[in-house]
Amino acid sequence: MIKVMQSIEDIRKNLLAQVASSDNPSELLKAPELKQLYDKIKTLPTGGRSAYGRSVNELRKTLELAIVAREAELEDSTVEPIDITAPWDINTGHLNLLPTEYGTEHPLSREIENVVDIFTRMGFEAVESRQIDDDEHMFGTLNFPEDHPARDSYDTFHTEEDFISPAHTSTMQNRILKAGKTKLEAGGQIAAISYGRVFRNEDVDATHEHTFYQCEGVFVSSDATLGQMLGTLRSFFETYYEQKLKIKTQPSYFPFVEPGLEFVIEKPTVLGGNPLSSGGEWLEMLGCGMIHPNVLKAAGIDTEKYRGFAWGGGIDRLVMLKYGIEDLRHFESGKLQFLRKFV
Ligand code: PHE
Image (cartoon, rainbow, N blue to C red; front, side, top):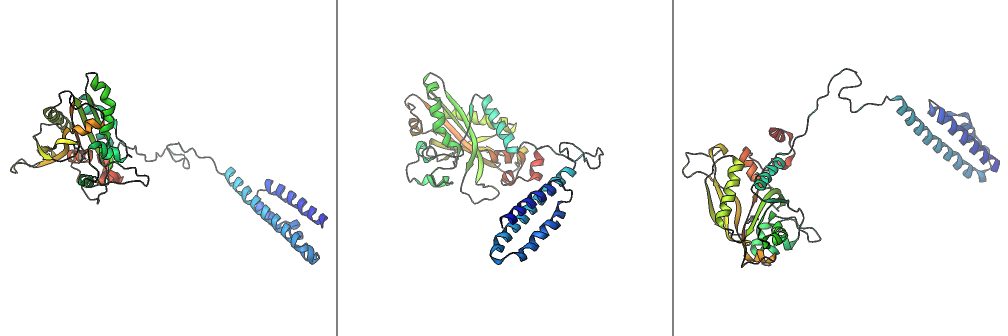
């Protein structure tokens, strides 16, 4: 029996060596040595058959695997390498240029840059907002009492670990105030904007998205006034829309400002407004107001000495109005037909 096994081993080595150099390796499955090994099974005494049979089957499997590997090797070496960087079809050899297209910046990224640029030129520092935050920054430091119904208007997504995807960029206020405290106390001012992605648990339609963008502004000094805030916002909107605008404010409520206002502009003709309609069409652009003393205190700022204003609003809406985009969902859709309009 030992001798028989020895011969299987010899045949295995021999066949594998042949596979490695064969141009048609599958032929070796018909090798007479292999056939002889199978034929031999019948001649063995019953007791020795199964061990012998198993070894022959294993040999056949090894051989099959080696054949597949050799075939792949042969295939690789017969295919000419392709220069995938060649700007023409190398199969024809003709200078037949393949159509190509450059990607473009997403309209929202471009407009965010534009917004940031306007505020930076007005002296505001810009920081990107966080996309994951906690209850303290979303509500606690913004003067939302526990269980206050105002929390309901900021219904957003929570992780199992109790992190929050922020429903507004106001989550950055406390960080901006803390970071600017030293400069303020040294006689300077805090002037910063924060911009970024925010999230709300919304039923999505043409004017509501679960993911959108906001820009927040924070200004604190020893003598900040509402008048300065209105001037800042008017300047921003007139620069962004490149025209004079009629503005007004109307009362509103946000726990983190007092008084709280909505900043409203009259829709100008170039933005699709109708000058003949009586009183024009007013558009609410953002929420704003004087920063509530509790918000300043939460950042350790002395409310006897300093006061400030803050505003925050959607960037998507700003852009939709500028370009007459009728459906907010286009922005996140990835539709090329939409994106190509902004090339
Ligand atoms: N964070 C508010 C919102 O998204 C807007 C706001 C910001 C209001 C700052 C006042 C001051 O609804």
